Amino acid sequence: MPHLTCVGHTRAELNEVADQLHTGGYRNIMTLRGDPPKGQTEFVPDKDGLRYASDLVALLKTRHADFCLGVGGYPEKHPEAPSLDVDLDNLKRKVDAGAAFITTQLFFDNAVYYRFVEQCRARGITVPIVPGIMPVLSLKQVKRFTEMCGAHLPEKLIKRLEAAGEHPEIVETIGNEWAVTQIRDLLAHDAPGYHLYIMNRAKSALALAAGLAA
Image 1 (cartoon, rainbow, N blue to C red):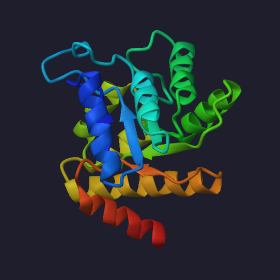
Image 2 (cartoon, helix red, strand yellow):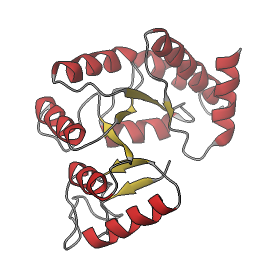
Image 3 (tube, rainbow, N blue to C red):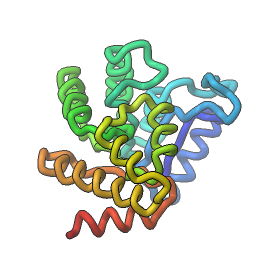
């Protein structure tokens, strides 16, 4: 599924990319605002560009109505949002603009996802909400990612990773076991599938798939 962001694009360029994707046969697109370019701390839209993912969703649906568009959701609030209520309002705006499903930012406590789904439903957001899971490959890496996206790292998981020390194979096993447990519980509670954040580490994804099939 192609990912398309607002970063560094004018409206005309985004329309051109949309046309290229449509001509190429793509109908599913992950639609994101995107992060600020490296070295910048604040997102600044390109001249005649788009500031919000909701604007990108609206542009794409206007250009090609048969696009199926996904958007991101933050179970523990987007780091830039002043409050969870504001963040949920922004998410509703993306769905109202034409998004067909939501994929969440990573989380390590399923209670966070279940609460988020309830909050979305209470807001009138009825589209599928796909949970995003990241198998831990190192304690340093996961701490960096959770700090960036505002996700909570359970103390129980931290202690297990710390106990593994400098043994990457043990850390990876712990990360996969935690992810497998999360996914099995999510599917048992009717989650509409799951999305893996694997950071281009195919080996981890294959090990996780094998664990789920066991």
